[in-house]
Amino acid sequence: MEDYKYLFKVVLIGNAGVGKTCLVRRFTEGLFPPGQGATIGVDFMIKTVDVDGEKVKLQIWDTAGQERFRSITQAYYRSANALILVYDVCCQNSFDSLPQWLNEIELYAGSKVLTFLVGNKVDKMSKEIPTQIGQQFAQRYDMTFIETSAKECENVEKLFMDIARGLTKRARDLNLQPEENNEFPSGGSTPISTFSCCKI
Ligand SMILES: Nc1nc2c(ncn2[C@@H]2O[C@H](COP(=O)(O)OP(=O)(O)OP(=O)(O)O)[C@@H](O)[C@H]2O)c(=O)[nH]1
Image (spheres, rainbow, N blue to C red):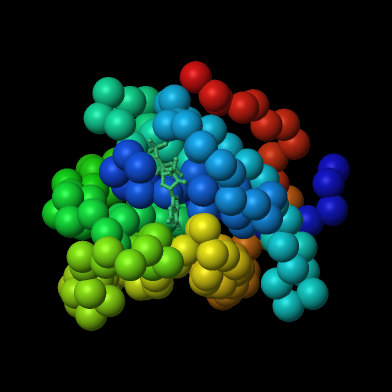
């Protein structure tokens, strides 16, 4: 078995084109992919990080924002330990869609899932959604708020590390044993030995 203490599932959601894949690739591969194409269905990547000297494995699911994939992507909410809801700070439409995404979370995610609201693309000059508006929205719906730039590598590491720390703290507080098939609040914080890639 691989050497890690916890495995957490993190799922990214949000409108098409807001930068979900770029955030994941920036964090897992340290790059900003040129000409990143739209995600088809769901894709995932893995990264192991260090939290207070312990290895924590993040299984990061990157879902397609396009409406036509919604029935596929909804299936991934249930087992998520954390959800990252992304909008584009330069795209009002992506911000206006947030209530619909919250509705999806309400319908399909576990009740105690850790939810982060991310305003991405802060490197762009044409910002349409002021930071304060994003912050207020996040506060109203009990989400942690952060603004990022996958392109300029701003706050991307912090986003995923805050999630890893938050989930690890919760698992420790609940005294979850990694080898047990414990039900973590919204799914499982359990190690799994095999992964299947779902690039559909
Ligand atoms: N300027 C800027 N552009 C970005 C940033 N993040 C992503 N992009 C661009 O936004 C476009 C969409 O990025 P993706 O990561 O494919 O978006 P997505 O949310 O995964 O889209 P779907 O897979 O269709 O749901 C690409 O052209 C990226 O280059 C960023 O932080 N800054």
